[in-house]
Amino acid sequence: SEPQYEFLKVSTPRPGVGLIELHRPKALNALFTPLILELNAALRAFDKSTDIGCTVLTGSYKAFAAGADIKEMAPKTFAEAYGSDFIESWSGLPNLIKKPCISAVNGHALGGGCELAMMADVLYCSTAANFGQPEIKLGIIPGAGGSQRLTRAIGKARAMELILTGKNFSGQDAYDWGLAARVFATPEECLTGALDTAETIASYSRIAVKAAKEVVNKSQDLGIREGVEFERRVFHGLFGSEDQKIGMKAFAEKKKAEWVHR
Ligand code: HXC
Image 1 (cartoon, rainbow, N blue to C red):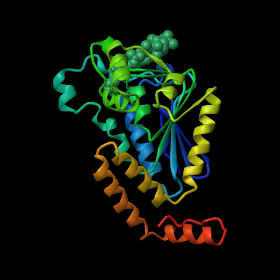
Image 2 (cartoon, rainbow, N blue to C red; image 1 turned 135 degrees about the vertical axis):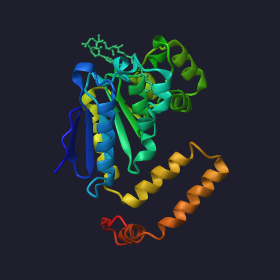
Image 3 (cartoon, rainbow, N blue to C red; image 1 turned 90 degrees about the vertical axis):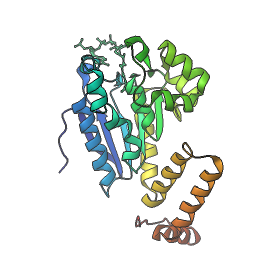
Image 4 (cartoon, rainbow, N blue to C red; image 1 turned 90 degrees about the horizontal axis):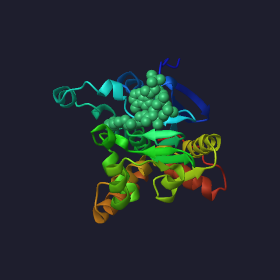
């Protein structure tokens, strides 16, 4: 039976697709510790489930997430923040799960909300989505990877300006600048688009999908030569999988591959 969450809605709307909806509507999905703990648990559960091949993470149409919870953060001391490694539990999300996660961003995605959206493997949004790293206005800076992921995605010139001014940017901007893989006219289309893509990904060999995510992510850490060598090693390794034999045999026989995910 599926675990019950207080701040998430969790479902399986398509074959092989896990959907996690952040659900703290009164605070526009502000990210506080109980919600983050549930999110980690839900992501891990889908990642472990043999029924699931891809996850979609979304909020409401009004807010993906309006940031880390300012009221929870306000009284923290340096010793508390440093001592408990505040934020560490979720800024490592991309490495926590091996299966792909698509974020479908509608409404506000600010501060930690923008950072959470960027942690996903693929980011989709609607044109009116409202992104930003407004931390500077609160006397702090991005703390969950924003300064690194936004900069890599849209370039130093734009990221520096946005992080220093705290100015917001639209879903259309996110797409035009290469942060979002796709942009949709409405929130409904955005969520449907994310679920469609997740269903496609979930229809492939889990082994190959996991390897594909791993090698693309490595490109962010390695130089081109080491990256290409890493890719080739993983590519060679896939010839040890049953799914490689199944996929290529199915092509030759003009049949649909029936993956065994081994
Ligand atoms: C705590 C929040 C919140 C947040 C909204 N709320 N954002 N509570 N932390 N980040 C609460 C409000 O206090 C309010 O509660 C309720 O949600 C509705 O918000 P309103 O402001 O009334 O809504 P609206 O007028 O529509 O404005 C929406 C908004 C605004 C523009 C998104 O809420 C806003 O500016 N929020 C803060 C955005 C922000 O600065 N985010 C970055 C946080 S710093 P009540 O009880 O009054 O009804 C951050 C650091 C990350 O994320 C570093 C590492 C993770």
